Length: 194
Image (tube, rainbow, N blue to C red):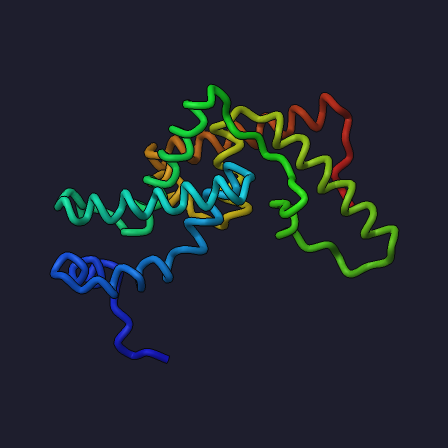
């Protein structure tokens, strides 16, 4: 256990003073959260790798250019850069990402099935599939907040910073997502209790 663990701000400061190793420490400290938040939006490992790399190139260039503003948390700033790069990618493609499973990964793999009999597991899997389809039907901004909150385990403050909106806007998007999900459940007459 390292008793001298430095804060992100201390590592950024050391990097700006020429200590290149501190950047590697920052990347290692936050790579999983940044990578996961990108992947949950793009659903493609190769594209995630590209955007992840592009994110940290932009981080390095901004730091070296002296344009980093220490108003908020370092990780929130990095997540906002990553989010903006994802949006730029999909704007260039003239489409927005959908929450879709791939053979490699499902955001719903993070949900734990109950330890029960086979019937319970089948019922829980059916609920997961129904919820997945419902989330796909949400508008992008609402879908994005649901994914970031429940599958990337981000706080509303982090979501707000990442999506470049106020906390109230992020909370509002979640509220509307839940309202829309309830409406979809009613319209489709689904029973989501396992």
